[in-house]
Image 1: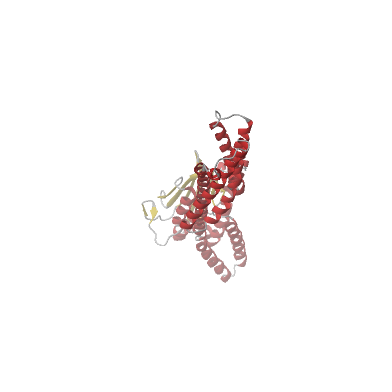
Image 2: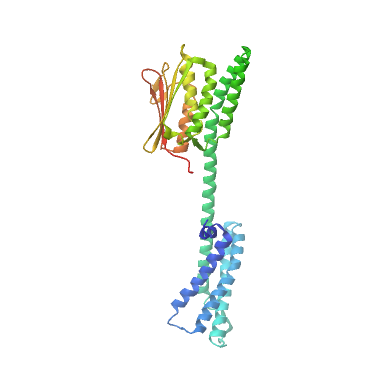
Length: 357
């Protein structure tokens, strides 16, 4: 973080920096403006004394205004006006004392109230100081509100993505536990134990990976292999899986567990409906700056309308699209098509990104 950023983020540093810089600027501008009036060191000394007096007298305004901001609008206005006038009056007296007693070498004005003249000019300066103070405070307040709103929006966005991800897991878990229960009833304990072990590894991967973050495709493929090994216990030889993963895609970042619901959907609506089983083909390719993912089955197919499956109560594919939209906004594509010669093909296009080393 740069020194400038630290100054901006610290209210104390920001106040003293701007406060001192403002009064230094006043002294410089005042000197330039009166350059033709007098250039002697005594006049420079008077200007510096006046600037220092202004610097000193306006410090209490910071604490008065901080308290005034907590009052009602009417009371705040009254407090601000009264404080401005009082500080301007005191500053005018100090400036006149400096002028008469120092610059004029002790010359006294004829009337005592002459020490209170030029209050208007002082009031204008103090008013400008007050305007800058409230302007900066209001700007900081607006920025803080924007940050809080952005933080709340981000937290809601992340919670939404997590909800979509974790909403998918119970479907798979229910089917797997049913299969394990069946194996136990058939006294195929070794197979049931292996299935429980794979289920444990798969669920650990699923829960350990934050759905907000992206993971390398190679890591995702390992989890999918675990999942498919579990499903192969259920379907035996009826489930055939064909992998076609380009070697350049292993390090590509993808949303965790993005393909599992698609494969689960293919098993549920294609493989399980076929007496002799079927095939699922999983493909990953790069094309320019995009990563192309493809999951196809050779099942009986389905009715597809406007790129969507016309099935009731299906949440898996709908959730995938919502997750992609939350993560990539409009920079993605998600389509469902008829596979040839039969079945359903789901295509995804997301930006090709790799993890920074």
